Image (cartoon, rainbow, N blue to C red; front, side):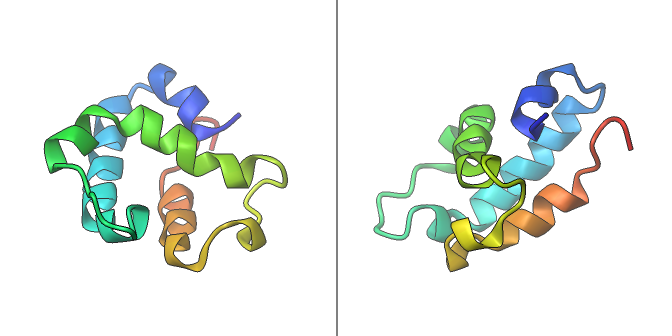
Length: 87
């Protein structure tokens, strides 16, 4: 199961969203390389949507780095840092 699918059911969901939001805000230039970066408030309000979108290139083969653009490699470490529930 992906983090975006399990996140609503995690007891630490709000802490995880906070960690994700912080990372997404810090890496906004990577997420919106052509400009038009939304506000930090918008990013915080759309954590679940952004996470699901960022997981798309990883779904087919797990955490396949080849499918992820170089500027987004930080996402792999972030997802690994957030332990799944069953760990």
